[in-house]
Image (cartoon, rainbow, N blue to C red; front, side, top):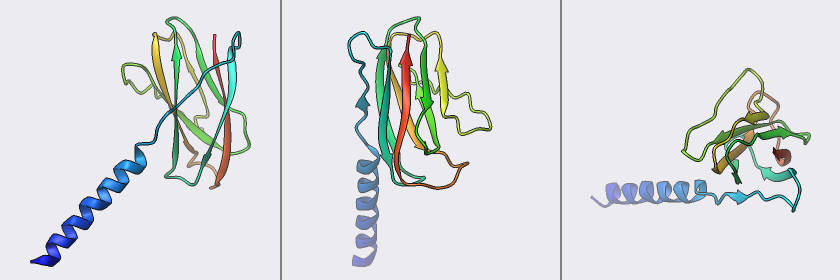
Amino acid sequence: MKRPAHAISAAIFGLLLTTLASGQHAARITFARGATSKVVSGTLNGYKDERRFVIRVRAAQTLNTEQVGNHSITIFITDPAGQDLDNSDMSCNNRREVTPTVAGDYHIVVVECQKADRWKGTFKFRVTVK
């Protein structure tokens, strides 16, 4: 009777750790006064890793993201209502454009491109809002 209880406890503990690990805090992207773009960087440790960012925009703007570093990344954007703005094509999807925007926080998730060679390290992408 103790073995099933230990197995269940271990499974629950494993799920808890997975949930805590994936509950990564999103880094807020802000621009210097008068600037319309910024290069953002982060690190990834493999295909299962991701980095989260959030940026606040006003209504009727254009939000652009594009990879500028050497490592291939995929960029996902979610609008303030939680709608995934997925317009996937056959590439790594390392460029995105949202126009016109609605006012609020857009969430950006960066992952390693699974269509390119594996890598670990630092990535860079440019965010532009006009």
